[in-house]
Length: 316
Image (tube, rainbow, N blue to C red; front, side, top):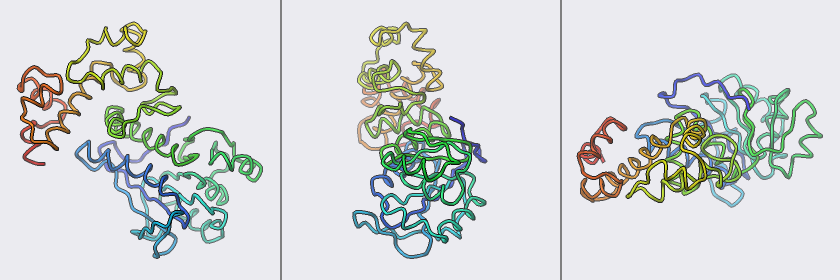
């Protein structure tokens, strides 16, 4: 899987355009935008901003009747990533106007992504020629026959240079989780996944191929279940059936950090949520996050988030 080249540093906001067509899937849209929103909320900064786009200025209606008023027309938009989302009835949207609009957009957006059946529209526009790509698996055979210059793959999502394709609504969540980890770090992706109470679905959200039963995901599950009374790392390794060294190697490869660092981030993530959303005392929050006293929590909190629990609460 070839990673796209982003033009901005991880600290700069990624500007995302979401191009909607009549018949788009609410499920696909939510699975795309909500993790981005969560990344902004949990990081305390704007990692992503997004705008809904259409070919014209009129409202766009989803397959279930939800109307979305676009922020802009496609012709007026530019950014880092354009996500093309037609979903149902996509063949009706493949005319010359769509093709011309997408070809022009390819000069204004660094990366183009076809979500669900958006791959078909990108392919019709000649924007996937020579690339590996996927599409909703119900359309994969027709996609393969119709576009012989594209290497079609039965995968949840494919990233090939500055082209991304995704097979459906559930896979859109996996894709966005992958991008968050790639752009903003696996620690933040882990917090987002924790917020949505997911630890993987066929492909680990936390980097690398795997499942919820992989040693890394089982270790994360143990950490999440034992935030108030943290387990020693050797005990976690024993419970997942790996040596401590092997677990550290796997987590470093998948998450970019060792078990102790990931465990601390999970505990501090809980503390930050309790500081911002509850009236619990800092002492009580410290106990719930596995710290013996408020001063220990405050030191770790400041090192992780560059602020103190009390300062964050005042801001909240």
